[in-house]
Length: 103
Image (cartoon, rainbow, N blue to C red; front, side, top):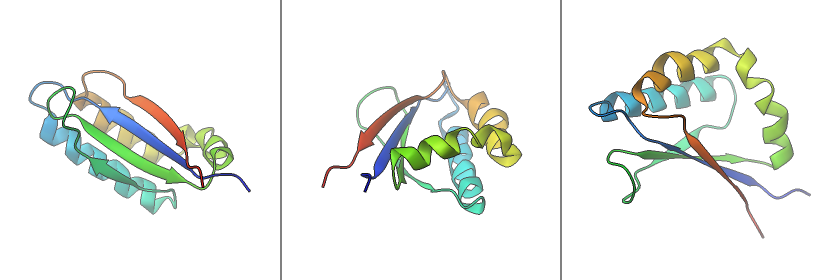
């Protein structure tokens, strides 16, 4: 059986956009949950750029993530949450780190 996968995405807001970026991430989380996708936790890092946010999302396996990754751009609500709400508030594209959970 495959090990679970944890995705960490780090978002850095444009100056003055910390609150709107956090609202956009909360909105995105709701959209993902409504689509039956794994939601994510919001973490506040104490290092790095001011008002950055890290999302932590858990998948059953890397294969499950890979299978859905191709589908995500075809779900208009998910695409709009990112491109219409989130990206206008961020300084740059987000950075993803993948972690396999070891048992």
